[in-house]
Length: 131
Image (cartoon, rainbow, N blue to C red):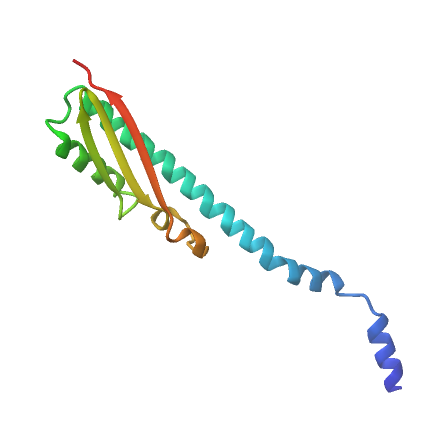
């Protein structure tokens, strides 16, 4: 009787899909989080580039009196979605250049991937000054 119970248990294939799904589920969940975080980083980079280009455009048509004002404005706009963002604006011979840095940790939705926590995203844009 005891051996019959073991034989029936060994030959029973009900529930095998459940075990397989339990083995694969963490991998799919990890990939979903990875894709989500990377997507948010790319979206944040595009948003930051738009802000930097808008700031450069405004500076090029005399919207800001000096480099510091442009840098302060751009940094303030960036910090609305990335708390540790910084921006530096220079005007060299009529070419306005802005370099912004945004920490990927500020852009991620979940932040569960440790490889992205220390990543720094740099955005650079240039604009000719209008006369």
